Structures are given as structure tokens and as C-alpha cells.
Image (cartoon, rainbow, N blue to C red; front, side, top):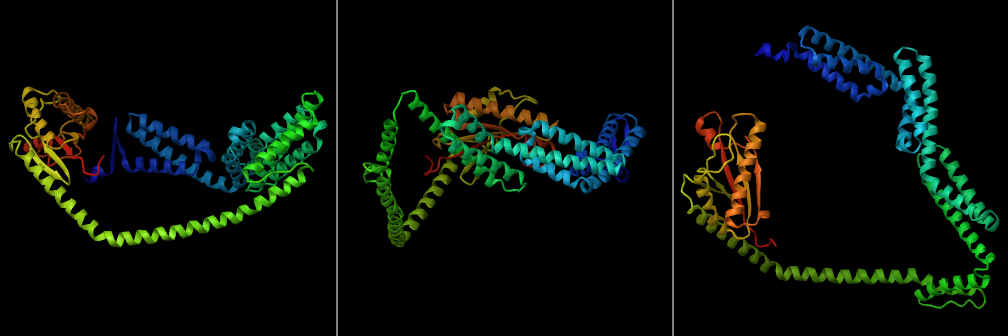
Length: 467
């Protein structure tokens, strides 16, 4: 036993198990330390050595490959630790650019930054610290540029497109103030992004406002073009806007007088809308009063009805338990001990079909098996609308994977036979194979293995509260 504990067997001969386990653990440490990124040369040499160790048929060659892997992973860990210090700014920039999805929104900038970081890492692996620092600084700047361009793409694209569309509508001439405001806000959003703050909420809000004013400029320009093309007059536009305000006033329960322009209508609407918060507060107060009264009613109902409800629940539980015991006894009387053992698991009934046998390695049902299964029809009738779970089990002989497949095939064969012969709906019957994972006794004896090779039919009754 002591000798076996220190030896790890692979094809071709024994290898020191401690060395194998140590190399695998060291590789896991290197992966956790991001050595593939921070020390790719040493990390790749380590993985190649591990591949040679697994493929080699010579024990001494495997031992040497494992030793090479250990040395390479140790070197990768040392370089990765140094890289996290020397390249800390570049790595922080990379994380920020990744968070901004620069790899998707600024692919060219991201690729250039990644290449420069890789150059810095390789310089560090060669021991050229000054070159590594210089290239890391360049990578930091490139990642910042990638992050900024990605953020611009995310937050500013819609506003820029809206400004271009407004310009196409000749808003620079027909709606110059609105277009100028949109450009102003866009410039402010760009400045906010360039400031390098972690919170980009302000930039997003400025970009949204820029989009709004650009679209407004486009709308104004479009209306001006309608007038120029004689598709509408100034009076038409005024009446259209008054119609919109009139509908809003009606919704608010008032009227809008435009005979002296929009000022009077605005005053009417403002007075009406100023009442809204007061009305809402009154509504909330009324709701709280109603909720309090409803709670009092519920408490009274509970005090009056709790005694009778508890008694009713107790009686229902007693009746349900008596009904299950009666059904259990009925099913038990249907089978001889050598045919099936009837077990109870809560409300579930388990029919352990001890008399059901299959040919070795087969899922074929013979005539004796079918005769026994035909008796199940009467047991199922005892539980109307029950659910049937057919479980297949094997002993531990043979390969676990084959046992799993065989147990599933046998469970499926029984389930299919039940559906075909008893008339039970297929959706109520399921089949599951457990292989040798759920023995009921030891597999060390012939009798134990025979008991573990079994089919269990689990009947789940429909409870009273089940639809």
C-alpha cells in the first residue's frame, strides 16, 4: 500500500505520483495567475511539457517532461507576479477597456493595445525591464484610447447620426439654434467621456439631450420645408399645434383658450395640473384608510374562523391518512411475497417487482414478466389519476456506463408495456435508469446482487388539492 501511494501509473510504466500531481497543481496556479497573458512563453513551454508527459511511453522521458513542466510553470508564476507590478497601469487600462467592450466597439484600437501589451510581456520575459516599462506605458495609452472610442461608440453614435440627419434636412439654415444646441451638448458629452471618470451617467444624459435637440432641429427644418413647398401654411402649423394642446386640455378635464395665443392656454393647463399632486395625496390617504379597514376585517375573520379551520384541516389529514393505509393494504393483497414487495414512502407507494426477471444483459420482457406486469393494472386502478415512475436498477457487475444504459432500457421497456396494456396515459408514466447507483443491499454476495437487480414502480397518488 505504501509503494502504491508514491507511484502514479500511466501507459508505458510508473511515474512518481507526487511529481505528476505537483505539475498539475502548478499548472492550475499558473492559470489562476493569468500566466497565459502575463508570461506566455514560459506558460506555453509548461503546457507543451505536460503534453509530452502524457504522450510519452517511456517512464524516464515522462519524468523529465514533468520536471520541465514544473520549471516552466514556476518561471511563469514568477514572471506573472513581476508583470502585475510592472504592468499594473496597463492591466488596469485593459480591464477598463474590456468593461467598455472595446474588443467589440473599437476592435482596431483594442488589437493595437493587445499587441503592445504582448510586446511588453515578452520584453519582461527576456529580462529587459526598461523596454517592458516603455511598452507598458504605450499599451496603457492605447487601452485608454480604445476605451474612449468604445464609450463614444456606445453613447454618442445615436446623437451623431441625429445631427447628420438634421444637417441633411438643412437645419443649419432652417433651425440653426436647435442644431447649434445639439452640437454643444454632443461636445460636452465627449468632454465628459474624455475626463476619465468611472461614472458615465452625465455623458449619457448629455448625449440623450443632444439627440433630442438634433431631432427637434430636423423636425423644425421639415416644417419649414413644408411651408416653402406650399404644402402647408403658417396658420396650418399653428392650428395643428393648438389641436394637440386642446386634446391634452380635454384629457386634463379643462379647456384651452388660444384666442390670445398659447399663454392663456398654458395658464389654464398649469392650474389644472397643479391640482394633480394634491389629488394623488388624497387618493393615497384614502387607500391607506381602506387598507387599514381590510386588515381589521381579516384579523376578525381569523379569530372567528381559526378554531373551525384547524379542526377541518386535522380531520382532512386523518381521513387522507386512513385512505392511504386502506389503498396500501389493497395493493399489498394483489401480490404474493415472491412477486412484489409493497413499500410506503410518505404518500407514495413503491412496488418492488422482485419476481420480474430479465435475461442477463437484456431488456427483453418474456411471457412470465408480462404476466406479472399485467397484475399492475389492478394496483394502478386503486389510485385514479396517479403518476407512475418506473425505476431501473442493476448490481455493480460490469461497467457503470453500461449498467446505466441497461437500467434505462429495462425501465423504458416496462413503462412502454404498461402504457400499451393498461390504457394509462403516456404522459403519466416516466422511466428512469439509475444503473448501480442505488443498491438496497451489499453487492458482495450473489443474493445481494440479485436483490439490487430490480424494477421499482413508484405510484404517486393524486392529492385532494391537486388539480
